[in-house]
Length: 347
Ligand code: PMP
Image (tube, rainbow, N blue to C red; front, top):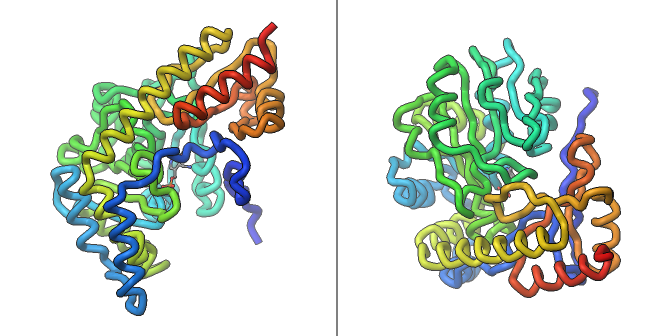
C-alpha cells in the first residue's frame, strides 16, 4: 500500500475538562433556530435518506451569496469538499502550489491522490508571496486568512493573481475563516471560471459538529465535483446537517452577533498578549498566532495544558515552532488564558 501522511487534528477533550482553544471551534453556541430545526428532523424524518442533491440547502447557500444553486457544491465539512477538489480538479501534469506554512491537510490530500506539489515560502513577515504563484495548469490553493498565521490577502491581490495565471489553472481560496473580518472573493466567481471558493459552517456558524462545508464556483466546476462525489458517497450531508445548516444560514442576526463577539475578544486578546511581550501576527481569523521571544512554543503549550488550557503548537516547519496558535474563546476564556500566561511567563 502507498505510504500515507494523514492530517493530525488538534487534541479533543471528551471529558470537557479543559478550556479548549486548540481547534478553532467557536465558543458561542449555534443559532437556536438551527438547534430547533435539527430537533424537528430528529422527531420525524430519520427513517428516510436525505436528498442526495441537497437542493434546499444549495438554494439557501446561493441566496446567502446572491448566486444560483448551480454554483454551489456541498459536502461533509469543508475537509471533504477540499478532498473532492484535490481529487477532481487539480491536474497531475504540473505540481500544485501552496504556501510552505498553511493548512496541513493540503499535503495529506496530495499524498493520498498522488498529486505533485511545491511549497512556496512565505516572506519574512509570514505573508504569502503572491508573485511567486505562477501556474499554467496544475493549481493553486491557500486559505484566506491563512492558517495558522491568520494573515489575510486582500481581494485586489487575489484578482491580480487570477489575471496573471492561465485560465486552465484552478485557483482555490479556502475561506474557512473569512467571516471574522476578511473580505470574500465569492463575487469574483462570476468573472473567473477557474476560481473555486470553499467555506465551512464549523467556525462562524458554530456548527463544527454537524460537518457542513461547501464550494462556490462556475457551474461546470460544480458539475465536475458532483461527478467525484457521486462516485464516492451519494449522501455525505445528512438530514440533520442539512436542516441545521439551512436554519443557521437564514439566522443572519445570530451569525453577525457571533462574529462580532469573536472580533471584539480577538482585539482584547491581542492587546493583552502584546502588553506581555508576545509578538502576534496580524490576525483576521478566530485565532491568533503568537510567540514569546526566547521561549519555545511547545513549552508554552505544555505549561498551559497543566493550567487546564489547550492551545495548538506546530513542531514543523521550523519557523513556526516558536509560536502557539490560540483560538479566540469567550471573553472569560481569554481572561483566564491571559492571567495564566502572566503567572507562567511574567518576570
Ligand atoms: N480549511 C482550513 C484552513 C481549516 O483550518 C479547517 C479546519 N480544520 C478546514 C478547512 C476544515 O473545516 P471543516 O472540515 O470543519 O469544514
